[in-house]
Image (tube, rainbow, N blue to C red; front, side):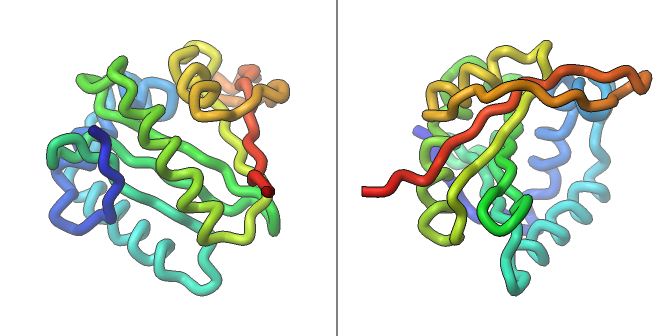
Length: 166
């Protein structure tokens, strides 16, 4: 079962492992291995962002049986919208953990933030991430061209989820 939890400086070795290998092939290249020192800096930035006023970032660790296997986060884009992202350690893929984490995270963010909409995108060569978003209630709304790697535009699928009103 997936548990969302706050991140601590002691998580640096786990975060370094998460941000490595195939998990970051579309952002850093598949051979990338985050140094623990960089993970320490990333965790300090997350702590500062999560405690800033006004708050524009929300980040939580994804744990299974006490093992930190990923992160889920969002960053405010404008007054009403935030961009959601998540990353899992590659040896935990395909077990529903990302979907469970997103399903738990979305109501937390909507409850805390005055947001009306969450947006997410994924690399077109990562359709599993699109399935996570669809299972978590997001709807595909189109694509956005991003320039990555060699500078050529890549059409990233874009999804959205609106706050439920009842």
